[in-house]
Amino acid sequence: MNLVLASPALALAVSAAAALPASAQLSPMAQGQGGYSVSAPLFTVGQTFTGTRGALNPLTAGDYTPPGVLDGLGAFALDANTVRVLANHELGAGAGYPYLVNDGQGGSFSLTGARVSYFDVDRTSRQIVDAGLAINKIYDATGAVATDNSFLTAGFTGLSRLCSAQLVPAGSYGLVDTIFFTGEEDGGNFNPIGGAEWALDVATGDLWQVPFMGRGAWENITPVAIGNPNLVAFILADDTSPFDADGDGIDEAAPLFAYVGVKNPAGGFLGRNGLKNGQLFVWVSSTGETSPLEFKGSGFLNGGFVPINNKPIPALASEDGSTGFDEYGFPTQRNLWIQAEQVGAFGFSRPEDVATNPADGTQIALASTGVDTYAVDPDTGDGVDTFGTVYVLDVNPTDGTGTLIIVYDGDADPKRTLRSPDNLDWADDGFIYAQEDKAETDTLNGELLFGPGAVNTNEAGIVRLSTGSIARRVANIDRNVVLDASLVDPIQAVDVDAGSVGAWESSGILDVSSLFGEQPGHLFLIDIQAHGIDDQDQFNAGSRLTDNDLVEGGQLLFLER
Image (tube, rainbow, N blue to C red):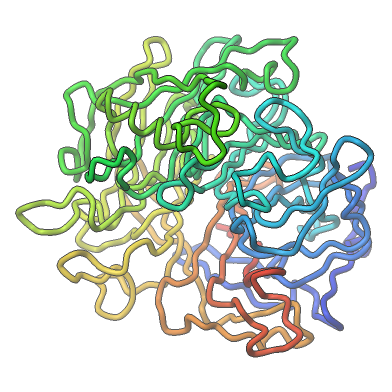
């Protein structure tokens, strides 16, 4: 951004249906705990930013109304006064109002579904000074500019469920460009092909499919320090519950993937960043364990990454994935899972977010959210990973081995401090911050995870973990704050899930302390998905919180220590 917008007086106008109060006057949908506090919201779903520049997509210049279901976040210094925040909107492929992208031929075409917004935040006032759509052009799996929506899974009208995200700055982990990685969390029994991984060039708004990273319900990826300037490496988390991938009547479970690519300076955007023609691997225990039934509670497992075949076979390309390959000839999610099972990969209950240790790029935090019907203990009758587990993977880049360590096992914690861990961030203060997203109601034996009768009666929130397994709650969702900012009077909103503890989630957390001049681990961006503030037109005729518009309520906030 070239304009200096340091003065709050120059801040972008924020409006809604009429005289909506400024965002600072709306209450936050979360409360800090144990010495942490939550700011007034930077943005509440329903607000429209007027006078926007369309910095990445000129088609959004003028007025921009970000939809709901905010999720994965990335941030970088745009200039001396401004931090640019990128945020996913985890919408289904057919949800949300249509938006336009450049077709590379002087025109545009329309998509619905998931998308990425940018929010430019003034470092001094900590207010949003510009906002818009972050996607300008889309490049399909062949590297061609998309001219219509035919690059999508058959029958889809947009990208699907862009979930957590990872921004990797240029010059780190081997990357040449600053890239915002975002994946479609779509697969299993919902999509026979699986979602794609995408790389957003933050300088241009160009969104590139990364087909060699494979197909899956991609929650997130995170870089690994590999010690070779010619290579890049990433860990990929496929957020799919166990399902019968091969049709044998027995459910398979998600492996943990790794990608290693060789950089090609003359290979265009993907090639120069090592994102083309790379190799996929899955993590395999050295001693044969394949499920949490064999590794739970505490301790570590030694293992290594074993290659699987992610190369395209164009002759087997299919629109519906029935051949085991997608329309471009790349293996489907089911294909990759079958290969993983054949090499003995460890099957996680349901891998969620991953994050790299900022102090040691060879260590990765992984949340597995838990599934009650997987890895059932015959003695107790309960799934051994129902409440969820947080792991650390310690990678040895010289030989491709990696040690899997249990940092926190919710089923082994009698206090049930952390339930259903979802998004997480390994912050600059050395702690892992994990967000709760209610994945199960109860165990097979009837123990509740959330609400009255549960051991832990807190609303869904954010828990800080040390690698020594000490857990501390730092924030909770505040279900008393029910807002629809598309209305003249936002408090007329209705929570259709009122009384259901854990129905909302904090999804998306990022340590931005260094970008705003704070001590490490003292300032975070978080977002709220207020799932119960949806279908609001049944209560207020003028509401935009409907499936084909802004979808649901939510906020973007600061969490501060």
